[in-house]
Length: 135
Image 1 (cartoon, rainbow, N blue to C red):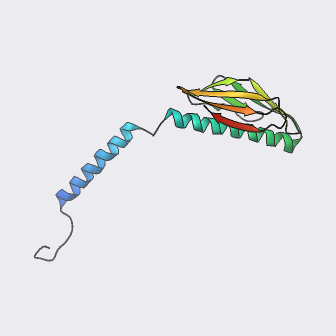
Image 2: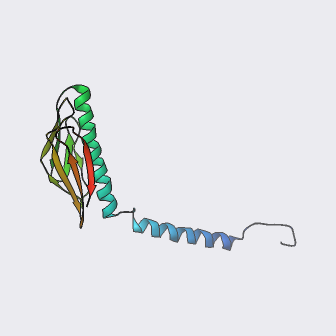
Image 3: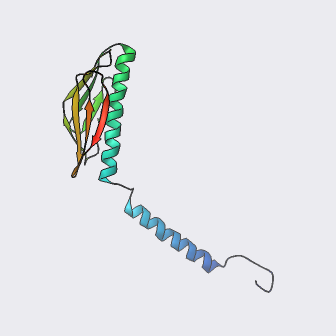
C-alpha cells in the first residue's frame, strides 16, 4: 500500500505487460494456423464420405441418379461446385460413382493418402452404404 492511499499499476508495469503480450502475439502469428497432415487427411475423408452420403440421399429424395466425380485434387457432386482437396492429400480410385433412385450405387473404393497414412472409403454397390477404413 502506498502511504497516500493511491493504488494501481505504474507506467513501467503497464509497458512490461504490453511488451510481453506483443511478443506472444508475434510468436502466434509467425507460427501460423495449426496444421497437420493427419488432421487434413481425417477431415478430407469425412468430407468425401459426407458428400457421398449426401449424393445417395439426393438420389433417393429426387428419384433420379446422382453422380459424384473425382479428379486431380477435386471431387464434385452433380449440380454443386467442385471441392478442392488439401495439397498434401492425394485421391485414388474410381473416376465417378453413380447413386440410383433406389439407394444403390455403382460401387467404389476411394483411397485418400497423405504421407504414409491412408484412409479407404468403400461404397457398397447394392445398398450404397458408405464406410471409412483407416489403414
